[in-house]
Length: 466
Image (cartoon, rainbow, N blue to C red; front, side, top):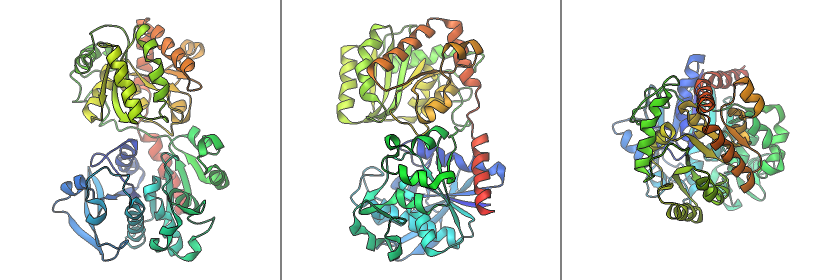
């Protein structure tokens, strides 16, 4: 089976978040199930450097009013194709947030649909709003290629004004409630959800949540209408990249049987973040600093965390007021709170391998990957009970502790009281070394590889083609 996987980013070439990790890991996850995956991404400058000397396999003279080429290469051991359209993607600034994003990602989707239809592919798999018009282009072209639409975060939908519709090259029939029209404008994600033969989200709980007004972000009615075509398949992690036994980003590698070796990594984190050395619990945050991630609530709880004997090492960036709130907390508590604004992939590995617990108080979380990395590294997750966080972390309540299956700590509503209570539960458990080691080992022994998730994706593909 040949599948074209289309996304706006893919690890290790270009990454802003978990989407890239998932897209980069899927080819290996699917290969054992007879699925040959080709990944298609835009030709950003960093991608172009990696594609020097690549073979040109297709050209467009007028793709959204610009010339474009398709370059063939490799990502790891798997096929990669890159949409080389310099006028759209070879520019300064971030991957997103440009005034013509609608044109840039409509071009990606249109090119992907052309390639899927003409290149002998059995199925197109579109990820998030940036690729979501591809199923619509396939649908209105009347091709036999099936499509799957994966929602990594329904909050990001790609909504634009109605004035762009004529430039998309879709037939008039596409302008309607069962097409691309969305509240009087064009909805990229909405179009993909309407057109795809199947929809997946990145955890079973999130697949249920987005049928509700509180989580559906205006698309809950459409999700509900698609019924059994909506599937929740939890993300996995790549053990070749995230494995404390072989991770070269760690000063000291370790296994579940040698947790004492983590101490050297903890000392390295303390030094890097200017924290006073100590044996009390060291919490970490590796996150976008946004409302969705509950960072405003966490900022209110930092004085309590320090007063209770905890420390914090934070790596992230996001909303300016939240960045300032964490920097102010670090100034109030020198040696107790350290903050790095930005993102650093090797440093994120060190934090997972050296911190004792990772805080993830998200108001909604489709799947989340940082808690999976935490489980794999013995960095105990403290999470809100939502989406993929609820699906992957077993709360250390009395029943779970008695059964010996607890892997972390959950809290309910995202409030100062609820999060503070979860932090205090974590600190009390940390004070019991045998109990703490058991929780760490439970998480490290859990299987969050792509083995089962890859099989579920492959089974879904096969059911659509059959």
